[in-house]
Image (cartoon, rainbow, N blue to C red):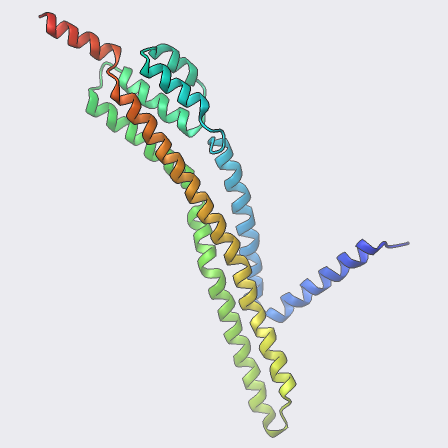
Length: 232
């Protein structure tokens, strides 16, 4: 059975990774688990934000708000029917609340704010665990380094005058591996967290803008009520 060069290189990389995990001790195992969790969270969050329309641009929602501003309420509602993106759901909720004759302006605003809070909470789901990973990964690395250095100096003390400086140096660099691993996990997690938070903030601002535009124009029901009051 023949093995090509890529197979040999892959086997060597796996062996080095296994040796690296063994040298790092329990802290490396914990950091490895955190790295898998962080990668899964990042991929899931990208998929979740794509479903919520984070990168769709909100073209349909903007068009619906424009139709609403022009007085074509039914067309605006029809355009947003069965849409599941954040902007569309919020705009439809605001229009429906304003269109509901049983709700006054304050109640309609409260209903719209309730829907907006739920949407933002859904868009922010998963960010707390990612923040936790970015915080504790370097701490775990530092803990592993401290424990490794304690073990190295204990070995140095037991060796007494016959201690080999090379052995001490080897124990120290092995201990420092956990700090490097913790930082390697924390830096991408923190970068992804900042990116996701900026996306959620942009969604929140766009939804607030759409809701404000919807509430600025009086509805047909409100306009008719004003005309009836003036006529009386």
